[in-house]
Image 1: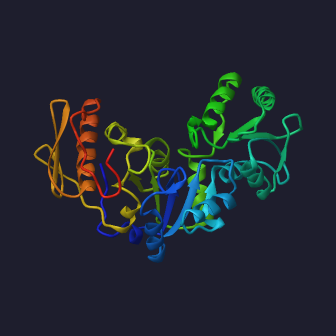
Image 2 (image 1 turned 120 degrees about the vertical axis):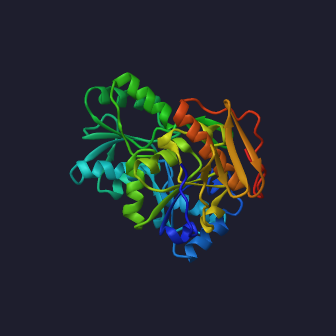
Image 3 (image 1 turned 90 degrees about the horizontal axis):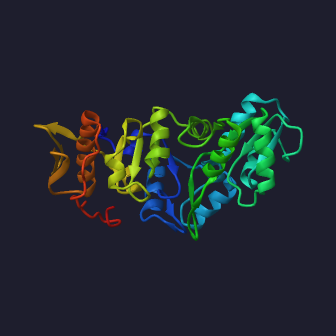
Amino acid sequence: MLGWSDQELCDAHDLVMLDLDGVVYVGGAAVPRAAESIEVARRRGMHPAFITNNASRTPQRVAQHLSDLGVRAEVADVVTSAQAAARVLAQQLPDGARVVLLGAEGLEQALRAEGLEPVGVEDEAEAVVSGYGPDVLWRDVMRAAVRIRDGLWWVASNTDMSIPTPYGTAPGHGVLVETLRRFSGVDPVVAGKPERPLLEETVRRVGGERPLMVGDRLDTDIEGAVGLDIPSLLVRTGVSGLSDLVAAREGERPTYLAADLAGLLTPHPRVEEADGAWQCRGWTARVVGAALQVRGGGDADDWWRAVACAAWQHLDRTGAVVDVAGLQPPEDDVHAAR
């Protein structure tokens, strides 16, 4: 079930790994209270690292975008899946090795920083690396697919099936990965969340003995933290809502829950079971038949904590996701609860 902390999380952890879209910003605007919360946590001794599965943008561009939104960020604070992918390659290939580049500027820069040489799809190479790149040509995809099928080692930056764009949600690099995988019959080494390399690269670059992962997606951010045995905080400013939370399997469950990044600045209470119900301060959640019922009042975060624990216990015992159709979450002071 959920963890708890008598300390504010910014005092209990010395490194916070922050997913970007849905956590620090949404589209072109900073999430309310994000910049202030990060700055307070920084002053309290928690080092923020800004991590992203997007392999197309360089750390310089990410840091500048954050600064433009009022979030203080140095280039060294940013870690991308492109850097993680380049590190995976550099650990297996000799210095100066040639790598077919199927991606954008961020991936090219990351390869060069690791002492590798990006080359074209027709050139001699020891591996191919792929990442999101809006200008990647289909003829290059076809040639790379044949070379992967014929045995060229393949590292993929991530497998995200969708990405946010100014014109709505669009296909992500995961769609290309699936195309290459189905054609070649080859599974790539994946660098981005939920796989280990990106989080490991973040700890290596930024440092920290007590890391905390913060994300809005159960299937990438939280699953990645669970896989690396790192505590995690799920915030409700992104894509994961009530139906996602109650259906979370063991490997997708966060340690902590909060409305937004202000959750870094508070303790997190215990959620306790009593007489078949789960209680978190003023709220009590219980499964009656197949439906979840909640009674009480108080802080909105405590409502979500009680609901999560009751739902997960029911899921573990029965294998069925609890019915939440009749539940209306309380509104918090940041946004209408999902």
